[in-house]
Image (cartoon, rainbow, N blue to C red; front, side):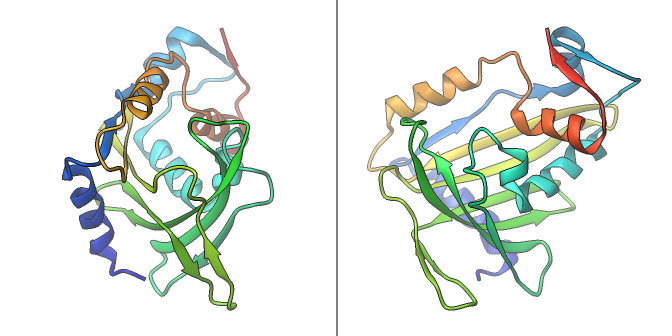
Length: 204
């Protein structure tokens, strides 16, 4: 496993490589979207602390927090001596062929101080129990940073993704640009509000 600080450095190197396809998705003001586009039972004021709690949980259990992306039963995680650094694997929908699933292997680092989570995609991984896992090659390797911004009572969900390509891929850029136009919360925030915080949440 790479040293903890190296995962953030790896992400930045990939992000600044002009050959790669890098997309910074628009900020999501969670409470504003809740007010404008949802009915929520009970008195809920979503906080920055809650948002970071969601990111930590999602990093370990993508199958629970990304139910529309990760194939049920496919997620596994291998810990290191540092509880904030681990490797995970899951079968995820391919970005441009969502009816198909492919193996995604990621080294993960949670930066508690910055409230940033880094996911570095890798081509293969030897598990502690002796298995050799290989990532799907039907789409480029990708790396993700999720992080939290804003005040405690006005949290903002942020994320950016970079794909290892031989040049900027306009099709991928258009796909994520369209994703960023949604007026709904990301699935993982809805799951956190409903299944962790216990509030019924209904899109208007």
